[in-house]
Image (cartoon, rainbow, N blue to C red; front, side, top):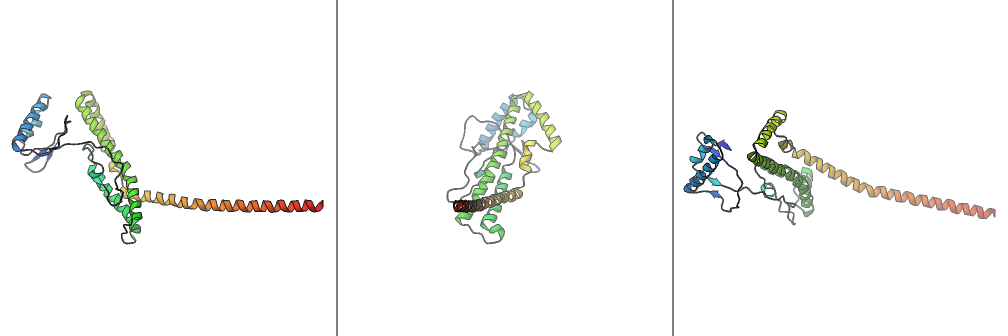
Amino acid sequence: RGTLAGDTETVFQLYFPAKTMEEAWGTLSHEEGRRQCAELAEKLRNDGWDEAFLAPLHSANSVIRVGLFSREPLNKWVDASGRIILLGDAAHPPVPYIGQGAMMAMEDVGVLAHLLKHHCCNGGKSAFDPSAANLSAATSHYETMRISRTRKILGNSHKLGATQQRRAESWVYNLQRELSIRMQVAFYGTLAIMKPGAAYDFAQDVARQIKEVEQSNDASLASPIVDLHTIQFRRRMVCIGLTITAAAIIVIHGRR
């Protein structure tokens, strides 16, 4: 893809699968950059690319080679001490097909800040108290909320990337996909797969989650009281029953 970085500068990015994994990523030397650009231009030309798209490869002043790696999602974002907390790319490195990696990081920060305020600052009414119990409650809630959401949203990025690869492999699928994209944009203003990310309000979700936890805790506290009342009622009924039975036996015995 190409983007304007200034009046006289164009940033041109190409993504393609690599058969080997290299560790030496970074800015290439001028000579190496020109050589690799020439090789890539020739390959794309043989694949039928228009010369207008190949021109930037012949005039590139700076070439940076980077690797995009797909990582399995983490199941744990907080260490045993509760004081090392992962967020952003450290917790969920995305592939760049859905463009929501940075947004997920900002959601992480917002959710964590709200939870720390609730659990460690008494909802903002007191000074920050990073005790083990408070941090454990905040981080446990944080993992519960964020791991499932980021796994869903960034998993969609893999799906979107797979469609791009299929478009390169099949002109029939490419035509179908192009029509699908145009229809989705016409109806939704964007791709439907993008909406679960863009429509999310983390502050409202935190408030809702906290309310649900508090209601659940209230219910668990109320249950023993109900059980205790039930036991006490049953004991009273048994006592009354025994008393009536004893009185009946005494009456019958007296009549005899």
